[in-house]
Amino acid sequence: MEYRELGNSGIKVSPVAMGCWAIVGDTTWGPQDERVAIAAIHAALDEGINLFDTAESYGDGYSEELLGRALRGRRDRAVIASKVSSGHLARADLRAACEASLRRLQTDYIDLYQVHWPSRTVPLAETMDAMAELWKQGKIRAIGVCNFASLDLDDLLALGGCATNQLPYSLLARAIEYAVQPKCVAHGIGILTYSPLAQGLLTGKFASADEVPEGRARTRHFAGTRPQARHGEAGCEAETFAAIARVREIAAGMSQPVASVSLTWLLHQPAVVSVLAGARSPEQIRENVRAAQIKLSSHVVQALSAATEEVKRYLGTNPDLWQPAAQSRMR
Ligand SMILES: NC(=O)c1ccc[n+]([C@@H]2O[C@H](COP(=O)([O-])OP(=O)(O)OC[C@H]3O[C@@H](n4cnc5c(N)ncnc54)[C@H](OP(=O)(O)O)[C@@H]3O)[C@@H](O)[C@H]2O)c1
Image (tube, rainbow, N blue to C red; front, side):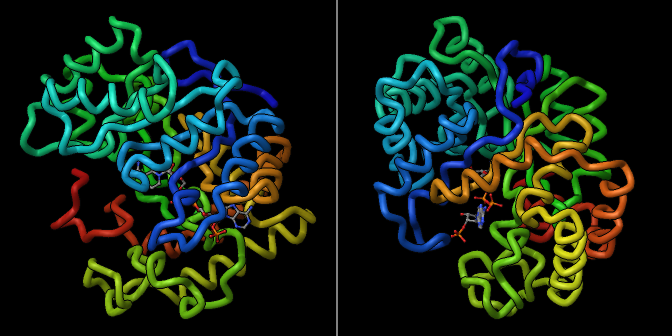
């Protein structure tokens, strides 16, 4: 596997990473066997995946704890990316959150420490200064953010920027292409893509919107009338499933799984360093890692983009998967 540089940090990471949210088995994801989750982490390492993305908020610390346990004796093979919640961005809170994450992860450093969502109360300068202190103390090796859209990125760049921006990006969620991604490209900020399989839609496992579990059928693809949706928009269910059918056909033409092809498409996009795919079993890990081996011609890359263009148009420039622009925590 060809490793890539994590922004300007000097840290090398696998282009396919393991997202460690779904393994907590919460109400969004449904039950998870802990032994299978640990086996998935071990399978990831065996397959050459070295980047693991977690957060203090996933399962209220359980994701970090699980990752820490699974990596015992293998810490040096992993690049751990964790996140501080938006409620912990004041200096003292951030320090305490980092210490708690280090304890749960059973390590004395976090490779990439990320702001999970921007704060509207704590000045960004205070947060970035506190991050820099942790970096100087060797508790974190690189600094990243998540969910920083155009205006937040401008504020961040004025303070000197950071290594990475973690953003929602998949064949079915392409809003960052309008303004955020070009800004990351221009300023050398690496993009880590979250929900790269559109929370399972791009694995082809759901034949229709009605088959998608409630906790996942709340993104803006789905009708705002779905039980857990909070966006109040019409959604674009028909267009989404028509797009999935087209992507499936292209993948079938290459005799490759639709999940792998969808991840490979992302790896061809500017500034994308690694795709954080939320695998829950060794089998899913082994399928997802194939994305790093598949070669797509520019013709196929364009065909995949064309297949999802209509969904891109429907969802518009708001990159938030869950909230309408007016209420979005992204700006
Ligand atoms: N920074 C942020 O605000 C933010 C937000 C969201 C996510 N994230 C990060 O991004 C990671 C990934 O995002 P995500 O979990 O939302 O969505 P995702 O990676 O698009 O989808 C994950 C789900 O797809 C299914 N799946 C994965 N690989 C598969 C395969 N090969 N075959 C069949 N099904 C497969 C699994 O669900 P089932 O087996 O249950 O169907 C899995 O839980 C998270 O774990 C987290 O680290 C960050």
